[in-house]
Image (cartoon, rainbow, N blue to C red; front, side):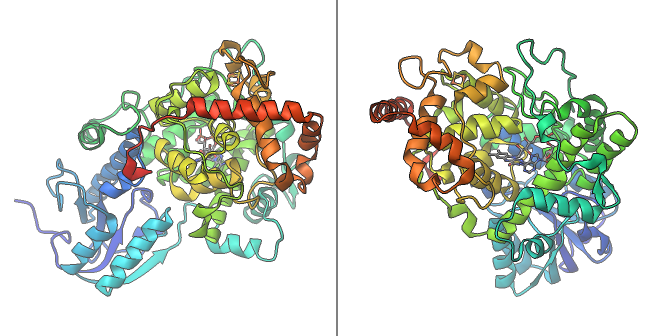
Length: 536
Ligand code: FAD
Ligand code: SF4
Protein backbone atom coordinates (compact mmCIF):
# COMPACT_ATOMS: atom_id res chain seq x y z
CA UNK A 1 0.00 0.00 0.00
CA UNK A 2 1.35 3.44 -0.88
CA UNK A 3 2.12 6.00 1.80
CA UNK A 4 -0.39 8.86 2.13
CA UNK A 5 1.10 12.08 0.73
CA UNK A 6 0.16 15.73 0.38
CA UNK A 7 -1.75 14.64 -2.74
CA UNK A 8 -4.23 12.93 -0.42
CA UNK A 9 -4.33 15.69 2.18
CA UNK A 10 -7.30 18.00 2.49
CA UNK A 11 -5.23 20.85 3.89
CA UNK A 12 -2.21 22.26 2.06
CA UNK A 13 -0.45 25.61 2.12
CA UNK A 14 -0.02 26.38 -1.57
CA UNK A 15 -1.64 24.61 -4.46
CA UNK A 16 1.07 24.85 -7.13
CA UNK A 17 -0.53 24.86 -10.57
CA UNK A 18 1.76 23.54 -13.29
CA UNK A 19 0.34 24.14 -16.74
CA UNK A 20 1.43 22.30 -19.88
CA UNK A 21 3.59 25.22 -20.99
CA UNK A 22 5.23 25.75 -17.58
CA UNK A 23 7.34 22.64 -17.23
CA UNK A 24 10.54 24.17 -15.91
CA UNK A 25 11.71 22.37 -12.76
CA UNK A 26 13.65 25.52 -11.78
CA UNK A 27 10.74 27.93 -12.19
CA UNK A 28 9.81 30.46 -9.52
CA UNK A 29 6.91 28.21 -8.55
CA UNK A 30 9.03 25.51 -6.95
CA UNK A 31 11.86 27.79 -5.86
CA UNK A 32 9.70 29.22 -3.08
CA UNK A 33 7.70 26.08 -2.32
CA UNK A 34 7.98 23.38 0.29
CA UNK A 35 7.62 19.67 -0.37
CA UNK A 36 6.06 19.09 3.03
CA UNK A 37 3.31 21.70 2.84
CA UNK A 38 2.57 22.32 -0.82
CA UNK A 39 0.90 20.27 -3.51
CA UNK A 40 1.60 20.36 -7.25
CA UNK A 41 -1.60 20.28 -9.30
CA UNK A 42 -1.74 19.28 -12.98
CA UNK A 43 -4.58 18.33 -15.29
CA UNK A 44 -5.03 17.04 -18.82
CA UNK A 45 -8.00 18.97 -20.11
CA UNK A 46 -10.37 18.28 -22.99
CA UNK A 47 -10.81 21.99 -23.58
CA UNK A 48 -7.08 22.60 -24.05
CA UNK A 49 -7.02 19.93 -26.78
CA UNK A 50 -10.22 21.02 -28.49
CA UNK A 51 -10.76 24.80 -28.16
CA UNK A 52 -9.02 24.84 -31.51
CA UNK A 53 -8.91 21.72 -33.70
CA UNK A 54 -5.45 20.77 -32.44
CA UNK A 55 -2.96 18.74 -34.40
CA UNK A 56 -2.52 15.35 -32.74
CA UNK A 57 1.23 15.92 -32.33
CA UNK A 58 0.59 19.24 -30.58
CA UNK A 59 -1.65 17.53 -28.04
CA UNK A 60 0.85 14.69 -27.67
CA UNK A 61 3.90 16.86 -27.05
CA UNK A 62 2.17 18.75 -24.24
CA UNK A 63 0.79 15.62 -22.57
CA UNK A 64 4.02 13.67 -22.84
CA UNK A 65 6.08 16.53 -21.43
CA UNK A 66 3.54 16.96 -18.61
CA UNK A 67 3.64 13.28 -17.66
CA UNK A 68 7.45 13.28 -17.71
CA UNK A 69 7.43 16.37 -15.50
CA UNK A 70 4.98 14.76 -13.07
CA UNK A 71 7.11 11.63 -12.70
CA UNK A 72 10.32 13.63 -12.29
CA UNK A 73 8.79 15.79 -9.55
CA UNK A 74 7.42 12.76 -7.70
CA UNK A 75 10.92 11.28 -7.85
CA UNK A 76 12.20 14.55 -6.36
CA UNK A 77 9.82 14.06 -3.43
CA UNK A 78 6.98 16.36 -4.44
CA UNK A 79 3.35 15.39 -4.10
CA UNK A 80 1.56 15.76 -7.40
CA UNK A 81 -2.19 15.64 -7.89
CA UNK A 82 -2.56 14.70 -11.56
CA UNK A 83 -5.78 14.42 -13.51
CA UNK A 84 -6.32 12.56 -16.75
CA UNK A 85 -3.77 9.75 -17.08
CA UNK A 86 -5.38 6.32 -16.80
CA UNK A 87 -1.90 4.73 -16.56
CA UNK A 88 -0.98 6.76 -13.47
CA UNK A 89 -1.66 4.67 -10.32
CA UNK A 90 -1.77 7.89 -8.28
CA UNK A 91 -4.03 9.82 -10.67
CA UNK A 92 -6.71 11.98 -9.09
CA UNK A 93 -8.94 11.09 -12.03
CA UNK A 94 -8.24 8.70 -14.89
CA UNK A 95 -10.03 10.66 -17.56
CA UNK A 96 -9.15 14.19 -18.67
CA UNK A 97 -11.03 17.03 -17.01
CA UNK A 98 -13.49 19.10 -19.05
CA UNK A 99 -11.62 22.36 -18.45
CA UNK A 100 -8.81 23.60 -16.22
CA UNK A 101 -11.07 26.16 -14.57
CA UNK A 102 -13.80 23.68 -13.71
CA UNK A 103 -11.37 21.06 -12.41
CA UNK A 104 -9.64 23.62 -10.22
CA UNK A 105 -12.98 24.86 -8.90
CA UNK A 106 -14.00 21.27 -8.05
CA UNK A 107 -10.72 20.48 -6.30
CA UNK A 108 -10.69 23.72 -4.34
CA UNK A 109 -14.14 22.87 -3.00
CA UNK A 110 -12.67 19.84 -1.23
CA UNK A 111 -9.39 21.39 -0.07
CA UNK A 112 -8.30 23.89 2.51
CA UNK A 113 -5.70 25.99 0.67
CA UNK A 114 -3.98 29.24 1.66
CA UNK A 115 -3.34 30.30 -1.93
CA UNK A 116 -3.14 28.96 -5.44
CA UNK A 117 0.15 29.78 -7.14
CA UNK A 118 0.94 29.72 -10.83
CA UNK A 119 3.52 31.14 -13.18
CA UNK A 120 1.86 33.54 -15.65
CA UNK A 121 0.13 31.24 -18.20
CA UNK A 122 0.82 31.62 -21.90
CA UNK A 123 -2.80 32.18 -22.77
CA UNK A 124 -5.05 35.00 -21.59
CA UNK A 125 -8.10 32.70 -21.75
CA UNK A 126 -6.51 30.25 -19.30
CA UNK A 127 -5.48 33.05 -16.97
CA UNK A 128 -9.08 34.32 -16.85
CA UNK A 129 -10.36 30.80 -16.12
CA UNK A 130 -7.97 30.35 -13.22
CA UNK A 131 -8.85 33.77 -11.85
CA UNK A 132 -12.56 32.95 -11.99
CA UNK A 133 -12.10 29.55 -10.33
CA UNK A 134 -10.08 31.03 -7.46
CA UNK A 135 -12.52 33.91 -7.07
CA UNK A 136 -15.44 31.48 -6.86
CA UNK A 137 -13.58 29.40 -4.28
CA UNK A 138 -12.56 32.47 -2.29
CA UNK A 139 -8.88 31.53 -2.57
CA UNK A 140 -6.09 33.99 -3.48
CA UNK A 141 -4.35 33.44 -6.82
CA UNK A 142 -0.64 34.37 -6.71
CA UNK A 143 0.77 35.03 -10.20
CA UNK A 144 4.52 34.53 -10.44
CA UNK A 145 6.85 35.97 -13.07
CA UNK A 146 7.98 33.59 -15.76
CA UNK A 147 11.76 33.53 -15.48
CA UNK A 148 11.83 31.69 -18.78
CA UNK A 149 12.00 35.00 -20.57
CA UNK A 150 14.61 37.72 -20.44
CA UNK A 151 12.04 40.48 -19.86
CA UNK A 152 8.63 40.69 -18.18
CA UNK A 153 5.38 42.11 -19.60
CA UNK A 154 5.90 45.07 -17.24
CA UNK A 155 9.44 45.60 -18.54
CA UNK A 156 8.12 45.65 -22.10
CA UNK A 157 5.32 48.07 -21.19
CA UNK A 158 7.84 50.42 -19.54
CA UNK A 159 10.06 50.34 -22.61
CA UNK A 160 7.07 50.88 -24.95
CA UNK A 161 5.57 53.66 -22.87
CA UNK A 162 5.53 56.97 -24.77
CA UNK A 163 6.91 55.51 -28.02
CA UNK A 164 4.94 56.30 -31.14
CA UNK A 165 5.97 53.03 -32.73
CA UNK A 166 7.13 49.91 -30.95
CA UNK A 167 9.41 48.26 -33.46
CA UNK A 168 11.29 45.04 -32.86
CA UNK A 169 14.66 46.51 -33.80
CA UNK A 170 14.76 49.04 -30.98
CA UNK A 171 13.41 46.70 -28.34
CA UNK A 172 15.99 44.11 -29.41
CA UNK A 173 18.82 46.64 -29.09
CA UNK A 174 17.47 47.66 -25.70
CA UNK A 175 17.56 44.02 -24.52
CA UNK A 176 21.02 43.43 -25.99
CA UNK A 177 22.34 46.35 -23.99
CA UNK A 178 20.39 45.48 -20.85
CA UNK A 179 21.50 41.84 -20.78
CA UNK A 180 24.94 42.48 -22.35
CA UNK A 181 24.39 39.97 -25.14
CA UNK A 182 26.78 40.22 -28.10
CA UNK A 183 28.06 43.57 -26.85
CA UNK A 184 31.55 45.04 -26.74
CA UNK A 185 31.05 47.66 -24.08
CA UNK A 186 28.11 49.74 -25.25
CA UNK A 187 28.64 48.84 -28.92
CA UNK A 188 27.29 45.78 -30.73
CA UNK A 189 29.88 43.06 -31.21
CA UNK A 190 31.32 43.30 -34.71
CA UNK A 191 30.14 46.91 -35.05
CA UNK A 192 26.67 46.12 -36.43
CA UNK A 193 23.34 45.43 -34.75
CA UNK A 194 21.97 43.64 -37.71
CA UNK A 195 23.26 41.16 -40.31
CA UNK A 196 19.99 40.77 -42.21
CA UNK A 197 21.70 41.60 -45.50
CA UNK A 198 24.01 38.56 -45.10
CA UNK A 199 21.14 36.40 -43.92
CA UNK A 200 18.79 36.35 -46.89
CA UNK A 201 20.34 33.85 -49.25
CA UNK A 202 18.54 31.26 -51.28
CA UNK A 203 20.11 27.89 -52.10
CA UNK A 204 20.33 28.60 -55.82
CA UNK A 205 19.73 26.00 -58.50
CA UNK A 206 21.84 23.30 -56.88
CA UNK A 207 19.81 23.28 -53.70
CA UNK A 208 21.01 22.87 -50.13
CA UNK A 209 23.07 19.70 -50.74
CA UNK A 210 23.47 17.24 -47.88
CA UNK A 211 21.78 18.60 -44.77
CA UNK A 212 22.65 17.45 -41.24
CA UNK A 213 19.74 15.37 -39.91
CA UNK A 214 18.50 16.80 -36.62
CA UNK A 215 18.64 14.69 -33.48
CA UNK A 216 15.44 12.67 -33.01
CA UNK A 217 13.94 11.41 -29.76
CA UNK A 218 12.28 8.03 -30.16
CA UNK A 219 9.10 7.80 -28.07
CA UNK A 220 9.71 6.11 -24.70
CA UNK A 221 7.03 4.21 -22.75
CA UNK A 222 5.42 7.41 -21.44
CA UNK A 223 5.27 8.99 -24.87
CA UNK A 224 3.94 5.79 -26.40
CA UNK A 225 1.17 5.80 -23.80
CA UNK A 226 0.37 9.38 -24.71
CA UNK A 227 0.34 8.68 -28.45
CA UNK A 228 -2.11 5.87 -27.77
CA UNK A 229 -4.30 8.15 -25.60
CA UNK A 230 -4.29 10.91 -28.24
CA UNK A 231 -5.47 8.50 -30.93
CA UNK A 232 -8.21 7.23 -28.62
CA UNK A 233 -9.34 10.68 -27.52
CA UNK A 234 -8.64 12.82 -30.57
CA UNK A 235 -8.08 10.47 -33.49
CA UNK A 236 -10.25 12.62 -35.77
CA UNK A 237 -8.05 15.67 -35.22
CA UNK A 238 -5.70 16.79 -37.99
CA UNK A 239 -2.13 15.62 -38.28
CA UNK A 240 -0.08 12.46 -37.90
CA UNK A 241 1.83 10.88 -35.05
CA UNK A 242 4.12 8.46 -36.95
CA UNK A 243 6.98 10.93 -37.12
CA UNK A 244 6.72 12.12 -33.50
CA UNK A 245 10.27 12.70 -32.25
CA UNK A 246 10.10 15.97 -30.28
CA UNK A 247 12.05 16.52 -27.06
CA UNK A 248 9.78 16.03 -24.04
CA UNK A 249 12.21 16.40 -21.11
CA UNK A 250 14.75 19.06 -20.13
CA UNK A 251 17.59 16.60 -20.82
CA UNK A 252 16.32 15.98 -24.34
CA UNK A 253 15.83 19.70 -24.89
CA UNK A 254 19.47 20.32 -23.94
CA UNK A 255 20.58 17.58 -26.31
CA UNK A 256 18.53 19.23 -29.08
CA UNK A 257 20.23 22.56 -28.37
CA UNK A 258 23.69 20.99 -28.44
CA UNK A 259 22.86 19.23 -31.71
CA UNK A 260 21.70 22.49 -33.29
CA UNK A 261 24.77 24.42 -32.14
CA UNK A 262 27.14 21.73 -33.44
CA UNK A 263 25.37 20.83 -36.67
CA UNK A 264 23.25 23.71 -37.96
CA UNK A 265 23.94 27.05 -36.29
CA UNK A 266 26.70 27.91 -38.78
CA UNK A 267 24.19 27.58 -41.64
CA UNK A 268 21.33 29.23 -39.78
CA UNK A 269 22.12 32.83 -40.72
CA UNK A 270 22.71 32.64 -44.46
CA UNK A 271 19.75 30.34 -45.12
CA UNK A 272 17.19 31.37 -42.53
CA UNK A 273 14.91 32.77 -45.24
CA UNK A 274 15.42 29.98 -47.79
CA UNK A 275 12.90 27.30 -48.70
CA UNK A 276 13.34 23.91 -50.36
CA UNK A 277 10.68 21.35 -51.26
CA UNK A 278 10.75 18.21 -49.10
CA UNK A 279 13.23 19.73 -46.61
CA UNK A 280 11.30 20.73 -43.50
CA UNK A 281 14.21 21.57 -41.19
CA UNK A 282 17.03 23.02 -43.32
CA UNK A 283 19.25 24.88 -40.80
CA UNK A 284 16.48 25.73 -38.33
CA UNK A 285 16.85 24.79 -34.69
CA UNK A 286 13.52 22.98 -33.97
CA UNK A 287 13.82 24.42 -30.46
CA UNK A 288 10.57 26.40 -30.28
CA UNK A 289 8.57 23.60 -28.69
CA UNK A 290 11.22 22.99 -26.00
CA UNK A 291 11.46 26.73 -25.34
CA UNK A 292 7.71 27.27 -25.19
CA UNK A 293 7.01 24.32 -22.89
CA UNK A 294 9.89 25.68 -20.75
CA UNK A 295 11.98 22.55 -21.09
CA UNK A 296 14.83 24.75 -22.30
CA UNK A 297 15.77 28.20 -21.09
CA UNK A 298 16.17 30.92 -23.70
CA UNK A 299 19.08 32.30 -21.69
CA UNK A 300 20.86 28.96 -22.12
CA UNK A 301 20.08 28.83 -25.85
CA UNK A 302 21.40 32.35 -26.41
CA UNK A 303 24.52 31.74 -24.30
CA UNK A 304 25.29 28.54 -26.22
CA UNK A 305 25.08 30.38 -29.55
CA UNK A 306 27.25 33.28 -28.33
CA UNK A 307 29.84 30.80 -27.01
CA UNK A 308 29.91 29.12 -30.42
CA UNK A 309 30.82 32.48 -31.99
CA UNK A 310 33.43 33.30 -29.36
CA UNK A 311 35.01 29.84 -29.90
CA UNK A 312 35.07 30.33 -33.68
CA UNK A 313 32.49 27.60 -34.40
CA UNK A 314 29.99 29.95 -36.14
CA UNK A 315 30.10 33.32 -37.88
CA UNK A 316 28.74 36.36 -36.13
CA UNK A 317 26.03 36.84 -38.78
CA UNK A 318 24.57 33.41 -38.02
CA UNK A 319 24.82 33.83 -34.28
CA UNK A 320 23.32 37.32 -34.35
CA UNK A 321 20.52 36.01 -36.58
CA UNK A 322 19.69 33.29 -34.06
CA UNK A 323 20.00 35.59 -31.03
CA UNK A 324 17.69 38.09 -32.76
CA UNK A 325 14.97 35.41 -33.01
CA UNK A 326 15.11 34.53 -29.32
CA UNK A 327 16.19 37.69 -27.52
CA UNK A 328 14.41 39.85 -30.11
CA UNK A 329 11.30 38.37 -31.71
CA UNK A 330 10.36 35.95 -28.96
CA UNK A 331 10.45 38.62 -26.25
CA UNK A 332 8.88 41.26 -28.47
CA UNK A 333 5.80 39.25 -29.45
CA UNK A 334 5.22 38.33 -25.82
CA UNK A 335 5.36 41.99 -24.87
CA UNK A 336 2.82 42.86 -27.56
CA UNK A 337 0.52 40.04 -26.48
CA UNK A 338 0.33 40.99 -22.82
CA UNK A 339 0.13 44.71 -23.61
CA UNK A 340 -2.75 44.32 -26.03
CA UNK A 341 -4.86 41.41 -24.80
CA UNK A 342 -7.74 40.69 -24.73
CA UNK A 343 -8.54 43.05 -27.63
CA UNK A 344 -5.71 41.86 -29.87
CA UNK A 345 -7.54 38.77 -31.16
CA UNK A 346 -10.38 40.87 -32.58
CA UNK A 347 -8.22 43.04 -34.88
CA UNK A 348 -9.17 43.03 -38.55
CA UNK A 349 -7.65 46.20 -40.00
CA UNK A 350 -7.98 45.03 -43.61
CA UNK A 351 -11.59 43.85 -43.16
CA UNK A 352 -10.76 40.37 -44.37
CA UNK A 353 -13.77 38.06 -44.24
CA UNK A 354 -13.11 35.04 -46.50
CA UNK A 355 -13.27 31.56 -44.92
CA UNK A 356 -10.07 29.53 -44.65
CA UNK A 357 -9.83 27.27 -47.71
CA UNK A 358 -10.28 23.58 -46.89
CA UNK A 359 -6.84 22.67 -48.25
CA UNK A 360 -5.26 24.22 -45.17
CA UNK A 361 -6.48 21.11 -43.32
CA UNK A 362 -5.61 18.57 -46.02
CA UNK A 363 -2.72 19.85 -48.14
CA UNK A 364 -4.74 18.96 -51.22
CA UNK A 365 -4.00 21.76 -53.66
CA UNK A 366 -2.18 22.08 -56.96
CA UNK A 367 -0.15 25.04 -55.67
CA UNK A 368 3.17 23.26 -55.08
CA UNK A 369 4.44 25.60 -52.35
CA UNK A 370 1.24 25.29 -50.32
CA UNK A 371 0.90 21.55 -50.87
CA UNK A 372 4.44 21.00 -49.53
CA UNK A 373 4.10 23.37 -46.56
CA UNK A 374 0.69 22.15 -45.44
CA UNK A 375 1.51 18.44 -45.93
CA UNK A 376 4.70 18.89 -43.93
CA UNK A 377 2.75 20.72 -41.25
CA UNK A 378 0.27 17.87 -41.00
CA UNK A 379 3.06 15.31 -40.84
CA UNK A 380 5.28 16.97 -38.25
CA UNK A 381 3.30 19.82 -36.65
CA UNK A 382 6.15 21.99 -37.88
CA UNK A 383 6.97 24.48 -40.61
CA UNK A 384 9.88 26.88 -40.45
CA UNK A 385 9.36 30.60 -40.17
CA UNK A 386 9.44 31.49 -43.86
CA UNK A 387 6.98 28.74 -44.69
CA UNK A 388 4.63 30.13 -42.01
CA UNK A 389 5.12 33.75 -43.02
CA UNK A 390 5.64 33.66 -46.78
CA UNK A 391 3.70 30.57 -47.88
CA UNK A 392 0.64 29.89 -45.69
CA UNK A 393 0.53 33.33 -44.08
CA UNK A 394 1.13 35.20 -47.32
CA UNK A 395 -1.54 33.19 -49.11
CA UNK A 396 -4.13 33.87 -46.38
CA UNK A 397 -3.27 37.59 -46.39
CA UNK A 398 -3.56 37.93 -50.17
CA UNK A 399 -6.68 35.77 -50.33
CA UNK A 400 -8.34 37.96 -47.67
CA UNK A 401 -9.05 35.23 -45.10
CA UNK A 402 -10.67 36.33 -41.83
CA UNK A 403 -7.67 36.79 -39.49
CA UNK A 404 -9.45 35.01 -36.66
CA UNK A 405 -9.79 31.88 -38.80
CA UNK A 406 -6.10 32.15 -39.70
CA UNK A 407 -5.23 32.58 -36.03
CA UNK A 408 -7.21 29.46 -35.06
CA UNK A 409 -5.43 27.44 -37.75
CA UNK A 410 -1.96 28.47 -36.62
CA UNK A 411 -2.84 27.87 -32.99
CA UNK A 412 -4.08 24.39 -33.92
CA UNK A 413 -1.46 22.95 -36.23
CA UNK A 414 1.99 23.71 -34.79
CA UNK A 415 3.52 21.79 -31.91
CA UNK A 416 5.02 25.03 -30.57
CA UNK A 417 1.76 27.00 -30.68
CA UNK A 418 0.90 28.86 -27.49
CA UNK A 419 -1.26 31.92 -27.85
CA UNK A 420 1.23 34.52 -26.53
CA UNK A 421 3.59 33.73 -29.40
CA UNK A 422 1.20 32.54 -32.08
CA UNK A 423 -1.31 35.39 -32.00
CA UNK A 424 1.02 38.37 -32.58
CA UNK A 425 2.89 36.45 -35.26
CA UNK A 426 -0.33 35.59 -37.06
CA UNK A 427 -2.60 38.54 -36.49
CA UNK A 428 0.14 41.16 -36.49
CA UNK A 429 3.13 40.03 -38.49
CA UNK A 430 1.56 37.80 -41.11
CA UNK A 431 -1.97 39.22 -41.56
CA UNK A 432 -1.34 42.92 -40.77
CA UNK A 433 -4.70 42.78 -39.01
CA UNK A 434 -3.44 45.01 -36.19
CA UNK A 435 -3.02 47.81 -38.73
CA UNK A 436 0.75 48.07 -38.26
CA UNK A 437 1.25 47.85 -34.51
CA UNK A 438 3.84 45.12 -35.12
CA UNK A 439 4.92 45.30 -38.74
CA UNK A 440 5.71 48.52 -40.55
CA UNK A 441 4.06 47.17 -43.72
CA UNK A 442 2.15 44.08 -44.79
CA UNK A 443 4.37 41.14 -45.76
CA UNK A 444 2.83 41.04 -49.25
CA UNK A 445 4.69 39.61 -52.21
CA UNK A 446 3.92 37.83 -55.44
CA UNK A 447 4.84 34.31 -56.55
CA UNK A 448 8.15 35.71 -57.79
CA UNK A 449 9.38 36.03 -54.22
CA UNK A 450 8.65 32.33 -53.65
CA UNK A 451 10.36 31.49 -56.93
CA UNK A 452 13.47 33.44 -55.86
CA UNK A 453 13.72 31.83 -52.42
CA UNK A 454 12.79 28.21 -53.24
CA UNK A 455 12.53 25.49 -55.87
CA UNK A 456 8.76 25.15 -55.43
CA UNK A 457 7.80 26.85 -58.67
CA UNK A 458 9.93 24.51 -60.78
CA UNK A 459 7.52 21.64 -60.09
CA UNK A 460 4.32 23.68 -60.09
CA UNK A 461 1.70 23.84 -62.81
CA UNK A 462 1.51 27.63 -62.35
CA UNK A 463 3.94 30.31 -63.50
CA UNK A 464 4.94 32.89 -60.89
CA UNK A 465 5.49 35.66 -63.44
CA UNK A 466 1.93 35.40 -64.80
CA UNK A 467 -0.86 37.32 -63.09
CA UNK A 468 -3.78 36.30 -65.31
CA UNK A 469 -4.51 33.39 -67.65
CA UNK A 470 -4.74 29.63 -67.16
CA UNK A 471 -1.18 29.29 -65.82
CA UNK A 472 -1.25 32.41 -63.67
CA UNK A 473 0.25 31.81 -60.23
CA UNK A 474 -2.52 32.37 -57.64
CA UNK A 475 -0.04 34.20 -55.39
CA UNK A 476 0.74 36.63 -58.18
CA UNK A 477 -2.91 37.15 -59.11
CA UNK A 478 -3.89 37.64 -55.49
CA UNK A 479 -0.92 39.91 -54.84
CA UNK A 480 -2.05 42.42 -57.47
CA UNK A 481 -5.64 42.03 -56.35
CA UNK A 482 -4.51 42.77 -52.77
CA UNK A 483 -2.77 45.95 -53.87
CA UNK A 484 -5.83 47.07 -55.86
CA UNK A 485 -8.18 46.37 -52.93
CA UNK A 486 -6.02 48.10 -50.34
CA UNK A 487 -4.34 50.82 -52.39
CA UNK A 488 -6.16 53.62 -50.60
CA UNK A 489 -5.57 52.25 -47.12
CA UNK A 490 -1.87 51.67 -47.79
CA UNK A 491 -1.23 54.88 -49.75
CA UNK A 492 0.11 56.74 -46.72
CA UNK A 493 2.68 54.04 -45.90
CA UNK A 494 6.12 55.08 -47.23
CA UNK A 495 7.31 51.47 -47.27
CA UNK A 496 4.51 50.57 -49.73
CA UNK A 497 5.33 53.37 -52.16
CA UNK A 498 7.28 51.29 -54.66
CA UNK A 499 4.72 48.47 -54.78
CA UNK A 500 1.84 50.93 -55.25
CA UNK A 501 3.77 52.79 -57.93
CA UNK A 502 4.09 49.53 -59.86
CA UNK A 503 0.35 49.02 -59.49
CA UNK A 504 -0.31 52.41 -61.10
CA UNK A 505 1.43 51.14 -64.24
CA UNK A 506 -1.49 48.75 -64.81
CA UNK A 507 -4.39 50.26 -66.70
CA UNK A 508 -8.04 49.85 -65.72
CA UNK A 509 -8.57 46.90 -68.04
CA UNK A 510 -5.58 45.02 -66.64
CA UNK A 511 -6.73 45.71 -63.12
CA UNK A 512 -10.25 44.49 -63.91
CA UNK A 513 -8.80 41.27 -65.36
CA UNK A 514 -6.79 40.73 -62.17
CA UNK A 515 -9.86 41.28 -59.99
CA UNK A 516 -11.84 38.79 -62.07
CA UNK A 517 -9.02 36.21 -61.95
CA UNK A 518 -8.69 36.61 -58.19
CA UNK A 519 -12.43 36.13 -57.69
CA UNK A 520 -12.38 33.06 -59.93
CA UNK A 521 -9.53 31.62 -57.86
CA UNK A 522 -11.41 32.26 -54.61
CA UNK A 523 -14.46 30.48 -56.01
CA UNK A 524 -12.31 27.58 -57.21
CA UNK A 525 -10.80 26.91 -53.78
CA UNK A 526 -14.02 27.47 -51.82
CA UNK A 527 -15.58 24.36 -50.36
CA UNK A 528 -16.72 22.71 -47.19
CA UNK A 529 -14.11 22.81 -44.44
CA UNK A 530 -13.33 19.55 -42.62
CA UNK A 531 -12.96 21.57 -39.40
CA UNK A 532 -15.88 20.61 -37.12
CA UNK A 533 -18.50 23.35 -36.98
CA UNK A 534 -18.22 23.84 -33.21
CA UNK A 535 -14.59 24.81 -33.60
CA UNK A 536 -15.14 27.51 -36.23
P1 FAD B 1 14.31 28.82 -35.63
O1 FAD B 1 14.16 29.34 -37.00
O2 FAD B 1 15.43 27.90 -35.38
O3 FAD B 1 14.42 30.08 -34.65
C1 FAD B 1 14.99 29.96 -33.34
C2 FAD B 1 13.99 30.32 -32.27
O4 FAD B 1 13.67 31.69 -32.34
C3 FAD B 1 12.65 29.59 -32.36
O5 FAD B 1 12.73 28.33 -31.75
C4 FAD B 1 11.73 30.54 -31.62
O6 FAD B 1 11.75 30.30 -30.24
C5 FAD B 1 12.35 31.91 -31.89
N1 FAD B 1 11.62 32.62 -32.94
C6 FAD B 1 11.93 32.69 -34.24
N2 FAD B 1 11.07 33.51 -34.88
C7 FAD B 1 10.19 33.93 -33.95
C8 FAD B 1 9.05 34.78 -34.00
N3 FAD B 1 8.66 35.36 -35.12
N4 FAD B 1 8.37 34.96 -32.86
C9 FAD B 1 8.76 34.39 -31.70
N5 FAD B 1 9.83 33.59 -31.61
C10 FAD B 1 10.54 33.36 -32.72
N6 FAD B 1 6.61 30.47 -33.01
C11 FAD B 1 6.24 29.75 -31.94
O7 FAD B 1 7.09 29.42 -31.11
N7 FAD B 1 4.94 29.39 -31.75
C12 FAD B 1 3.96 29.72 -32.64
O8 FAD B 1 2.81 29.39 -32.44
C13 FAD B 1 4.33 30.48 -33.78
N8 FAD B 1 3.41 30.83 -34.70
C14 FAD B 1 3.78 31.56 -35.79
C15 FAD B 1 2.80 31.95 -36.71
C16 FAD B 1 3.15 32.68 -37.82
C17 FAD B 1 2.09 33.15 -38.77
C18 FAD B 1 4.50 33.04 -38.02
C19 FAD B 1 4.90 33.84 -39.20
C20 FAD B 1 5.47 32.66 -37.12
C21 FAD B 1 5.13 31.92 -35.99
N9 FAD B 1 6.10 31.54 -35.04
C22 FAD B 1 5.70 30.83 -33.94
C23 FAD B 1 7.49 31.99 -35.14
C24 FAD B 1 8.44 31.02 -35.87
O9 FAD B 1 7.93 30.69 -37.11
C25 FAD B 1 8.71 29.77 -35.06
O10 FAD B 1 9.16 30.11 -33.77
C26 FAD B 1 9.79 28.90 -35.69
O11 FAD B 1 9.44 28.58 -37.01
C27 FAD B 1 10.01 27.65 -34.88
O12 FAD B 1 10.94 26.81 -35.49
P2 FAD B 1 12.44 26.69 -34.97
O13 FAD B 1 12.44 26.37 -33.54
O14 FAD B 1 13.14 25.74 -35.88
O15 FAD B 1 12.94 28.17 -35.16
FE1 SF4 C 1 3.53 28.61 -55.37
FE2 SF4 C 1 2.92 30.12 -57.50
FE3 SF4 C 1 5.33 29.03 -57.31
FE4 SF4 C 1 3.18 27.51 -57.78
S1 SF4 C 1 4.03 29.08 -59.10
S2 SF4 C 1 4.85 27.08 -56.31
S3 SF4 C 1 1.62 28.54 -56.57
S4 SF4 C 1 4.45 30.56 -55.94
